Length: 190
Ligand SMILES: C[S@@+](CC[C@H](N)C(=O)[O-])C[C@H]1O[C@@H](n2cnc3c(N)ncnc32)[C@H](O)[C@@H]1O
Image (tube, protein in one colour):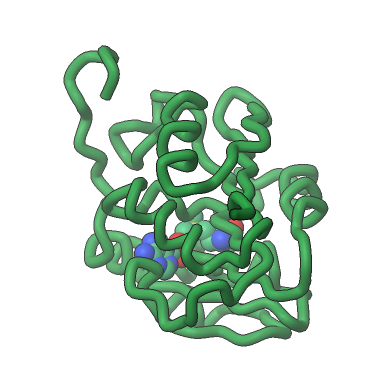
């Protein structure tokens, strides 16, 4: 994309590979995650949530929204879901075929999941459709190209293009450290 040389095809992409990957690592996921996912990132993500109707895409073991009574967590991996500690609703579902009505959510969170979607433009469009006008998307994603052999890595300009193309306004792109970024966007009010 955009003059960065030949495109690298990541090892984990598409729903079938992603589901198999997370089904396999589910028993160790929380221990691995505790070493990567920093407490201040979690606090940042939670502090950016608006409203009560929250969808956590790729909820995994419930790390980010597990304590919220009105959140809905979806995941491809039954093995991840079966380990989740969650107060809200959990559902095995593929975000690219969401079992929800349009405009159902105030906030949609992708904490470590947006970059597994097979098509980022489609993913952003689906998220925009599920949000109410003014609703927001919170993404916690990798920011270093060193991770590109494993997962998709988008830069700030790509996030802007992807999100704005779906009718979302990029609010901010914050680099959290050498490896990760937090991206916030809002659905435009007509
Ligand atoms: C790195 S884990 C993040 C888990 C959790 N959000 C956290 O912060 O610990 C990514 C999760 O996204 C899920 N996932 C990836 N693509 C998905 C999709 N299309 N629909 C639903 N879940 C998906 C995976 O199965 C996996 O459990």
